[in-house]
Length: 251
Image (tube, rainbow, N blue to C red):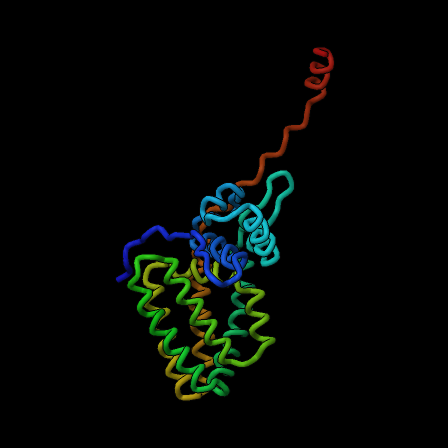
């Protein structure tokens, strides 16, 4: 049974990792978990209060998130959360299916004992996180599991490509996990995949990974299609000749 929701804390810890990276990650997670909704304007003041850092660091983080496609800067309005359509999500999932399937196949065939141990530890932490009331902890655990998987695959080009998609993949991952029952199904699918990885059966691991992503895609895309479309801005009414004449006469 899923733990009750607890509001996550997006304040940045002053740790050894580059501070800009931590700020970027904090805002990225806030968007993924719905703290900021699609199409919402992001003000520097609100982000500074949320993260507890300076405007300079927030601006640097926003530039990074813009390059990832997670936010867009609209003239005269500033940065806004990108609205990801169901069609765009389908495209991301098509790519993710191929890349994560390949990552599993390569991991099964090439990962070291140390990398296999790290993946098992990440999977244990993932299972524990499902009992955590903090959705941020659950999403971080899921992302860490995939980081370990990609590292064990040993293909830098694959890792770099997945990192380019990381922001949107994480956004969709958070979307699919919000569906009732999806968390339990996801864990069962990953457990089957782990068994294939332990057997060092690359083809089987790839097939199970692809099945896992396709199931996540069905859930997330259904939720996206169910969302109401953003209302288009009303066009300005063209002035009728009589209206124009009246205004000229009033001058």
